[in-house]
Image (cartoon, rainbow, N blue to C red; front, side, top):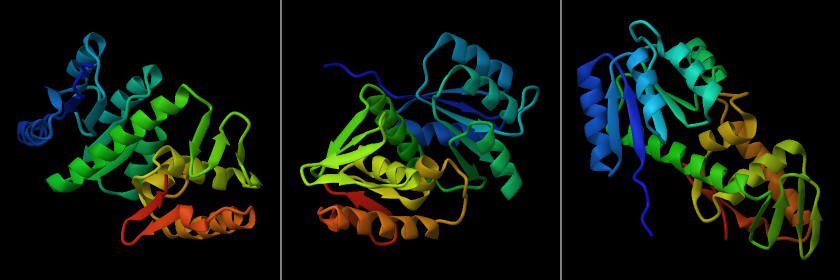
Length: 231
């Protein structure tokens, strides 16, 4: 079966940035296109499909915030902001407009690629999940329409937040999910830096899994990174 390559649009008015990011992405096997302003980006978006948008905020004409708003009005494609504006307020504004992540300049290529992979992985998982309301792993089945967790040992009584946490982990069963990714999926950026709240909710989730007769080790801690749900 032939698979279409992942296509990324990079929008920045600094040629050094677009060249650097484009080179890094192409080395990873992604296809890239670049635009130097919002108007050019919108024209490219109208004429081609992209799997990820990487946007600068300070663009001439249509700025990154407005470009993000227009993109999000039409599609759910992941958006990563790159910006020299590193204040908490700027991050909040970007995320409230619909961006999925925010990386401050200057940045390292490893962090850029890690965030890119995380966004693409989550987008793929969400797309696959959209075709079915049920997620099954480790002997547990979640019904996202009914918001129930059930297995051969009976139901697991979860709060809405615990359900979203478990759903995120189960959608990525066998893969490590960072605390930051769990915050994005389960909290919707209600919190931005308080990653310790994830640990507290994971403990409660494990307690409820165990109380229902399942192995709490289904949710494994990966030290220094996050958590993994065992398949």
